Structures are given as C-alpha cells and as structure tokens.
Image (cartoon, rainbow, N blue to C red; front, side, top):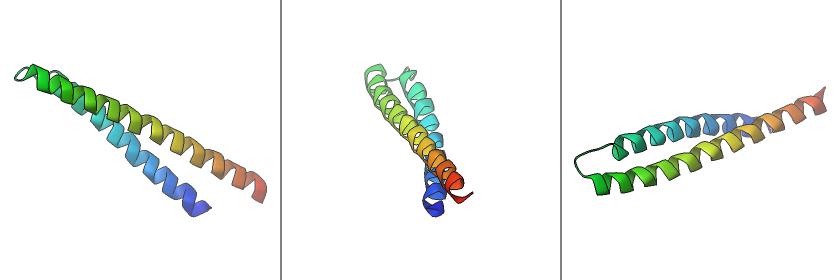
Length: 76
C-alpha cells in the first residue's frame, strides 16, 4: 500500500508538471502569429489536454494522500 502511495505521488507530480507545460505550450501556440488558424487549433487541443492531465493529477495526488492518512490512522 505504501508503494502505491509513493507511486501515486510521483505520477501526480509528473502529471502536474506535464499539465502546466501543456498549458504553457497552448498559450505559445495560440499566440503564434504566423499561422493563426492552425496555431489556434493546436493551442485549443493542448489547452484541453493540459487541463485534463492537471485535474487528473490533482485527483490522483489527493487520493494518494487520503490513502496514506487512512493507513497512518489504522497503524497507530
């Protein structure tokens, strides 16, 4: 169970970083002035994907912390 919690934390941190970089990438793609239509389409795709990963990571991290706190209460 402790391995699951540590693994969940690691995945959540990686997911948070990936989500933040996806949102930043969507901003850069959206503000690209060379090819407005393609850049905005790619920016919108990156933005929605970044939000999915970000919220998924927050949920996974929250579940890992709840799991750890329940285990600590059970153990002592």
